[in-house]
Each structure stands twice: as structure tokens, then as C-alpha cells.
Length: 458
Ligand code: GDP
Image (cartoon, rainbow, N blue to C red; front, side, top):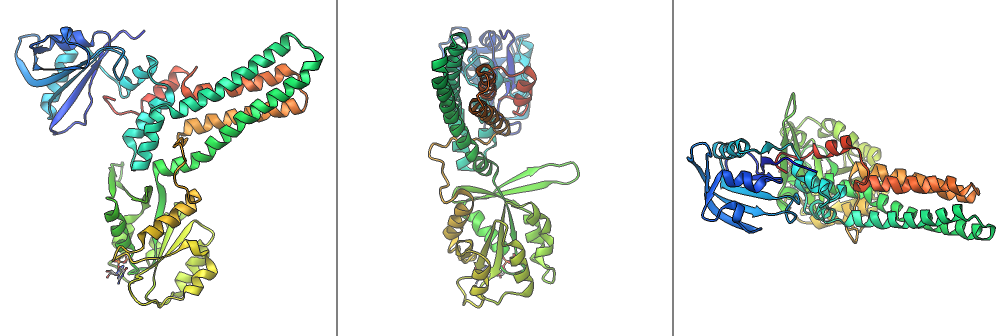
């Protein structure tokens, strides 16, 4: 049982129109009421109602802030506990003052992710759903967001629960057989176990298959844009960015600031590598832009090799083309608005046609062909998994692989006519690995580790 009441600022710190301070726990309404004066006392307010009033210092009755308080009574709240959310003026001082009086009134400062952790501990959501909340907050493209939303809604956990149910049935079947070992049912039982395990195995493999795509959709395809100076790399970058506003995130590092830049092409997020390099080298004409991007090329999932369609290929471009042909490379023949002077046949000799895209970065013409080419390269054409159950979490992938291993052993065991109680152990292991995925029997330290990834107030 959770007994203490927690409070935290739920909105980002800084100046804003409003800020929200959230209180949750058995004493949430009493704590908030002691620091809030309104026409209807919060303790008398109905669930899911909003009260206008003032945050006051309980010590002297002094008004601290004008605010709205939303009361949500258990279990119909984010944490499944009594929750009060106080919306006050955004601003570092006012928000901190409000938080301070709530802490004085008996709440404890929440740890990062503690509200979501409570939703999990109180059984309102399971672990895959809680983890999806982190993904929701961090998602960088519409598609990643919809996938996380689906997962938060429990699509993945329902699938995992169904698989576990099948395994329980199988174990029950084995149990009966252990207790009443009759020779003539043995063969039937073996066939039953094999079929059930193979069925679950197939579904796990299908989930794992989406994992790689899920990762790309969630974290973005690491993309290097390369090519010699003046072929139009930065123009391409700009037209991609305009097409779908670029998201730039600053990650303050210890020695230097790393800038991650994302663009989405047809709903697929591209995480652009070394864009600073592109912008720098465009001024230095004699510098071969390619040298600069060697690092980016090495780590990229996707290489966009830009060439100028209005001039013949250089020797260096041809050798780079040979080097990159085995990689996930798309050659962009830019400046399609000008006359074609490039030797197209030299390109077709080296790469399949679907990986050669003609476009005009400056006119923004032909970008949809680039979308198609990327889609074909990474998603075999179909970008969308029909039901959006992409597994993208590393922990989930690891557990699915373990469950898969156990099922393979169970199936082998049946084939090798191992004693049935040995097979039973493998089936049980698979069932447990899947259980760990949704938070059935996970250790406290794992729970702490998962929730510590959250931001404060979530
Ligand atoms: P970078 O050095 O590879 O980044 O090349 P830039 O993007 O700076 O482009 C070099 C020059 O080519 C600029 O003058 C651009 O305006 C021009 N350019 C880029 N893309 C196109 C295009 O599609 N058509 C035409 N006609 N010019 C382009």
C-alpha cells in the first residue's frame, strides 16, 4: 500500500502562460485544501471538477497565487489515487512558492516518474504502457507518437497476455498428463504442445520482425547526406526541412553541444548526421565534402549521396559510388530542372533503379520520389504495420528473444521425446519471460530503473 502523498511541478520549468503542480496520494485533497481557499472547499468538491481560488500560506493565511484546482478522486485519475492539479501563473517563482506550501502542508517531493510508477503499482497500467508514456514524451515524429499512443493504450500488452494465456493452457494440459500418464494420450499431448508452442513462436517472431522497423520509426533512421561541394546538399536539407518542419534538439554535452536534427520524409523520421559539416564545407570549395563526412558514412543507416545532374560524374564520385553500392545508399541526382549532363548509365550500372532518384532540391520537385525510395529500402514499401504494434523497446526485444529461445527448446524437446516435465520447464520459462515484459513479477530495482528515465512531475 502506498501511504504518502507526493507533489511536483508537472510542466517544464520556465516562463509560460500557466504551470501545473500535481499532488497525488491518499492525503492529496486534504493537503491541497489546506493551502487553497475557494468557494467550495476542495475536500467538498466533486470528482473531476475545477475550483477557482487562491493558494494561501497556511501559516499566516497570506495569498500566494491565484489559481485553478482540479480535483480527481481515486480511482479515476492518472495515478489511480486522489489527485489535485493546481494551475497557476507560469513563472519560476510562483510555481516554486506553490510547491513549497504544498510540501509544508505534508506532501513529499515526487521523484522523476513517480506519478506514472504509481499508476503502474496501483494496477491502472502495466509496464509496457508505462514505458510507452516515456516514448510519447520523447517522440520526434507523428508516426512514432501514434505507435507510442497505441502502446500506451495497451495494444502490445493485450497481445502478450493472449500469448501467455495460450501458454498457460498448454501447461495445464501438460500438468494433467503428468498426473495421469496414460500411454495412449501421450502422442496426442505431444502434438498439442508442439502446435501451441509453434503458434506462440510464430507470433513472437512476427513481433520481433517489427522491432527493427519500430526502432527506426521511433529513433529515426540515421542518415548521412554526402556529396562534393555545390551539388546541392544544403539545398536538399533545407527543402526537406521546409517540407516538414525540422526538429532540432540541443543536447548539452560535457565538452561540446551535440545538435541532433530531424526531418520527416513521408512520415519516416530521419536523424541527420553531421549537418554542421555540410553547412561548414559549403563555403570551402576546395575541400572535398566527402572527406568530412567519412565518420557519418560509417555509422549511418542510410546514405543520401547527392550528385549534380547538370555535370558529368567526377572520378572521386565514381569511386565513392562503388564503395557505397553495398550500403543502404540512395543516389540523388539533383538539379533535375537543368539539362542532364550526368552519365545516367554509369549510375544504373552500379545501383538498382529504385535507388536512383532525380529531383530538384531548389525547386522542391521530386521529393515524393525520395520518400518512396526510402520507404522501399527500409519498410519493403509498406511503412505502416497494419495494427501499429511495433516493438521498439530494448527491454521488450530482449525478453521476446528469451521467450523465443525457450519455445524453441520446448519444441525440440517434444521432437526428441524428452520427458514431459522437462518440456514443461521450457514452456514455463517462455511464459515467465513474457510476464516480465508486462511487469508480472519484475524486481523492484528494474522498476526503479525504468521509472527513473522519466522527467520530474510525470
Ligand atoms: P552544397 O555545397 O552541396 O551544400 O550545395 P548547395 O546546396 O549550397 O548548392 C550549391 C548551388 O547549387 C547553389 O547555388 C544552389 O542554389 C544550387 N542548387 C542546389 N540545388 C539546385 C537545384 O535543384 N537546381 C538548380 N538549378 N540549382 C540548385
